[in-house]
Length: 177
Ligand code: PNS
Image (cartoon, rainbow, N blue to C red; front, side, top):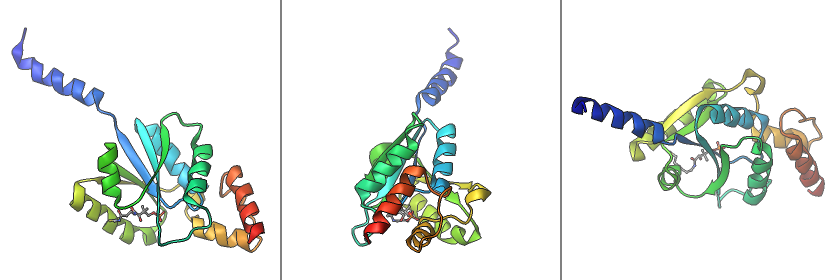
């Protein structure tokens, strides 16, 4: 056997065996079609995508974390390699606990860039966790959960901006307020 070729073979099998697991983190209060565009594209690129909902005890959302997770489950059910989870504390700790080496973020506009860059650099500094940015589909470049909630609250039409299951939950929740 050619001993000189063994390390190259070993390296190849290590690369093949390695699961490329990434995380799409966020508040998802609620998930929008913009989020789903990024999650779906990430699912096409990586072996596993973990959608991680931040549990923020200091911020009261329109939907509970359980409801957000449930809506994400429904909206991502078509992808076999997407799992939904929740986390509190530092994102880098969640990554370490789940064997995740990279964070996927959507960038809508230049206004997103500064803060996202700070978080990306801080996460890399803390734990060598990489952040990969995807440009948002121009169809959704103006879309954010807070705007969806505000528009829906005042009776505006948000169909086409969120999945249908979210639309009905939004109507229900806002009718109760
Ligand atoms: O949807 P959002 O609210 O813009 O998501 C922000 C999120 C959850 C990605 C970010 O706040 C986060 O990662 N929070 C976890 C706490 C943390 O790790 N903070 C240090 C960031 S450098």
